[in-house]
Image 1 (cartoon, rainbow, N blue to C red):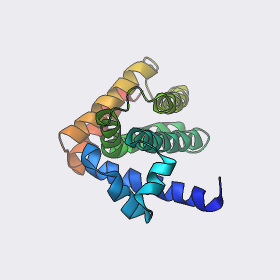
Image 2: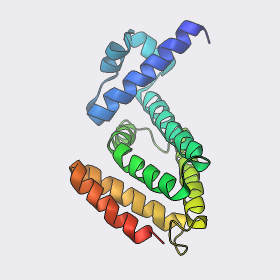
Image 3: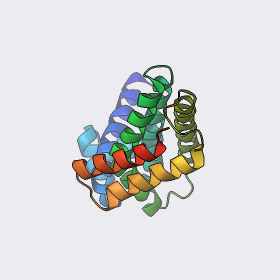
Length: 181
């Protein structure tokens, strides 16, 4: 791919992430093209359908989160890394949910690349959890399935009930108290 085409693709993906995170399924590819500073034909040359564009945006977001989690595995104290990343995922949930919903509404179906990226993010959270348990920061009797269910539930609650930041933070403190060793 030529350098200008790579640049355009990156600009389209950045614009699409913002547009769809803000507008969900009501957002348009025309708005994406406008924000990216390209023509609509350029958008469709890179992403022939709206579901393909949405899947690429969702995959990019999930992969960035996965990479962020992976970087924390050897970084911060294990407990802080786990709890901080849990909070980051909850804070990021509104945009991710809006994009995933838009993908579903656009007929994106199972979206295999998004499913793969989501699994990789889950595995990265599992590594953070494992380290936090080994360090004694998280209860030894919890496992990834229930922690991930908590993460999803807390994220959805924060988004769908439009919690303000103070309530969200207090909710996270309660959840974290229940997870601590």
